[in-house]
Length: 515
Image (cartoon, rainbow, N blue to C red; front, side, top):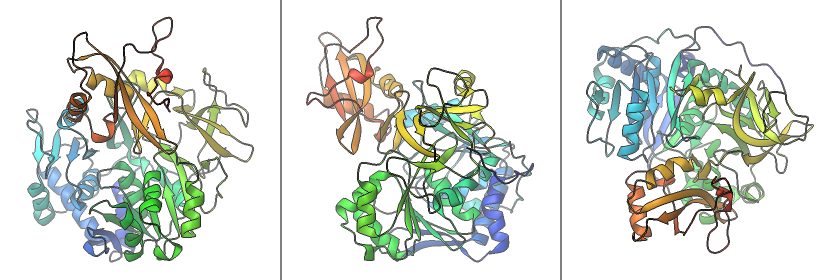
């Protein structure tokens, strides 16, 4: 499956591409609308000229602080526009931001700080740290506000397309998250999504359901609309699912993006009709597999299509349906224009399988959206490449028309609330509890469309079997979405004859099995 992606420039800065072009062509056009109430009243309105001025002042302030180009900056801020401005300002200045989730505990944030070797950290609101390693520069919200007011504007850094742009951390096949390092060219590599998924135009207004500190929001919610001269809308108020139809209508959103759970909750709690969505053209969905019947129910209630995409932290989305790719039942969609994908044998090898055969979905390593690599994890990085192909671990089959049918994950990664979580990471945290002798975690379907993380624990002899205590222990060490929702004490974990854990054999008492 081949196509053509526009020629990538040799010198390329992601922030200049996303913001600088629109600021030159339509400086007074609305770039960012931030609203905090259900009526959609703007709390902040930023033109492209405003956004460019802000990020270049931040770039200047970071340079004046003494940080050197390429320095990594961990961002741990509240859900405000300052988060996005610092992210893009760092990239504009040639620095490497590390956006982190607001749900991370201090233990998790400290690990990222040390593993990344970050030279600076931005802290604000309730997301402070009890200690910061010596030599790490700390910027608080007052420092950022001062940069926006007083720092001299810098120019965009003259970066190469393959220079590092940002670093994100994702759960993987080890007990600790791994860093995914993306190049400046990653923004250019998102171009196939514009028509392959969004149907995006300069006159669109994109409302994203996520927070500023989520990479899905930073990409689909900000980078892509801005790169097209369109308006990004972010809601920072209470996340009541019944409010989304009103927000969509009141803000004039033409596109709406979120995880499947948002759409399911909207249909359940808002009971919307097709008259409730204003000028919305269609919805966009990614992050996890949608529950059965969601597409049909959404379209019946709203009269608007819903388009799905499949992606991963290493490349973002690369397979999707969209206005130009009609949805086919059971399929995610097709490879976006210009993407080269293949299905490779599960057991190994780099020769693509024929149409219709199931295997591991792969994307060609020449794709400009593909990561530079895993941060200081050479063995894990080597394991995901087969010849010219990057293999992300998704099982799939591709039919003769190019439609991709997703069959799940080849490994044991769990999905909960739209997030990918390594069972090894959760197990490593729980195993530190003095009562725990053995532990295994798995994704468990509690309903046809809802999965949670369950922990199966073998307690030490004589130790208390207190599920509440285990839950409290986990909450101190893991983000909320990583914490098990079900704690089961068992006498033994299911294992093969050679002692290997049989994760798929883990069972809840009511007979529901792991997903």
